[in-house]
Length: 209
Image: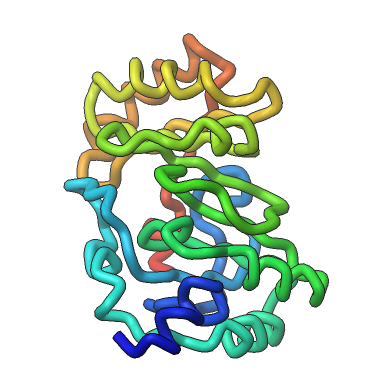
């Protein structure tokens, strides 16, 4: 890779942009809210059920000037969700500063597997067993969203919930390919453990991006 581009990537002034689009937030605390999504490439967490595996290789996605991404976002919404891939593989300071200067709220969806960078109005932490979050991300998370693929994930969810702050909102979300089997179990679990809420991928039911 060109050294100049690599330097800009390291500073966050360019990002490997997979896609950007205006849509409705489909899951978690802000379900139903209009937001501009910025999906960056690059992830080494390796969830076998990941529905955006094409995001894993950052080199497949063009290094894009961050100012251009910010300008695009400002045309659509006062809320931006940065997701991936794993966005914390990249320096998020520059893009979040630029967005907040335009009075745009900054949200992130992250596994927490990398150190926290950026200024965030909302941090959705979705931890994964094979690469656990950094301790600092637990304490700053506004929302804990655990994907439930099998029964063992309930124990994992409780382990993760013990590490976040008391103000963090707790969600269990069925993994889409296994949702018919796991959703009834999640319903029962939440009724027995009402500190948890259910998150559904409503954008898939509504057939929107």
